[in-house]
Amino acid sequence: MKRITLIGLAILLISSPAMAQDAPPAEPAPEAKPEPKPEAKPEGDPTPEAEQPAPDAEQPEAEAKPEEPAAEPEAAKTEPEPKPDVEQVQPAPAPASSSFGDRPADVQQTAPPARAEDYHYDLIVDLRMQSHYLNDDSIFAVKDNDVVGYSHLSVGHALDSVLPGLRVYFSFETALTEEVNRLGGSLTSDWGHWNFMLSADYGMDLWGWLRPSVRAGAGYALQSLTLTRSGDDPLEDYAHDFAYTGSVGLEALWRVTEPSAGGFTLAFMTQFGYFGQTEAEFDELSRSDDDTPDDGFAREDVAVGSIDTSGLFWDIGIGIRLDF
Image 1 (spheres, rainbow, N blue to C red):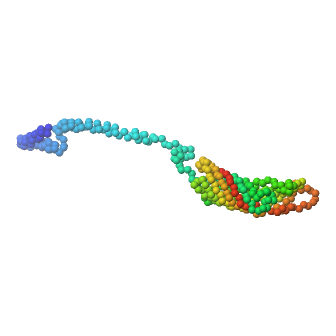
Image 2: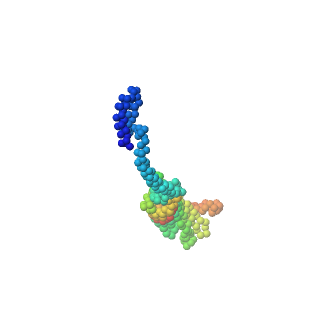
């Protein structure tokens, strides 16, 4: 087709001068207009004649076009392939939440256990059995030996906000005594001893289960003495004294539950120390008002001396610690 067009252009160029001579002067203008159109063909400006062969030239392009849609389905096939993978990952179920908060349950299960400093005991209760070894022989007036057993109950609270490891205790002690017979049973004595103490205890936690400590306290001591002579009314007297104590102790802790579940802890303990008290004076033994006859006779009080209950002591006990 290109050769035909070139030959046609050559014929037009050859015939154009002859036509220009035979034709009138006004006609060359319209005939000269189509001349630039064939010259523009190589530049890409299509002419009416060039538009006809365009379908023939586009045929090879049309043959290539079906190849492109053939590639498009392949691309379309490859694009959705990663989508199922993404969809399988996204709807993965989230871990179930626990009853203690919005955090996942699996995170709480793998959380580290509570440390010793995480325990802030709001209530401490100890029950101990003590043995006091008295220094003075005056105790033999009311007992057969110089070793006195005591039961000890204390209630405490941890003051970690003031000083880590500091505790305060209120304790009550009572002597375990019984009547003693003298003079072949004609005279019996009944002695009692009670202590009310306020103590401060400082210790440190080792390895999360062992706690050595030191303790110091002071308080009020009450003693009573009752003497009964055969066939006579009993004589009784009370002594009010100041008491103090100092000791070192050791606790072994068994944490039953974590603080989040109530913080219940069992404690096994022992303590060794010194108990001191001012001497108890029993110099006003007299009948009670109910036993004193109203016969008009004046009666004098009986003095038997003093009892010193100071000495070393040792105890063992068990207790509970609660963290609210």
